[in-house]
Image (cartoon, rainbow, N blue to C red; front, side, top):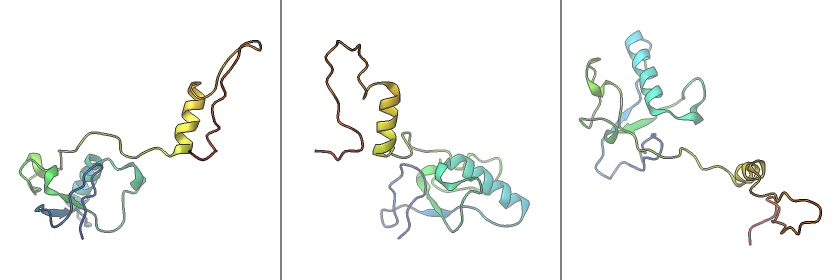
Length: 125
């Protein structure tokens, strides 16, 4: 089953969406188009070389519902993407950030009573 590769897009084949493979090819036109699509999609987990394999984007990311081969068309590159976080931070990352912000670690003078917060490495209750 095909899934949309855009961040925060849950569209799948069978829900009435058309899917379009990310451009590929050795011709400069196709290489440029692929580069523009990858920049628009903004997947940080694809690394510097982009991606390998066949990934698809659903029609929801194009104004007309499908890509255009016309460079001057607004649908030459996908432009509609949902806003939001790309990935959830792991619990370890969240705990480290909280500790560095001082929100998980109590700061006090020696004669101040302090409530001790549970260690982030302990399991949740």
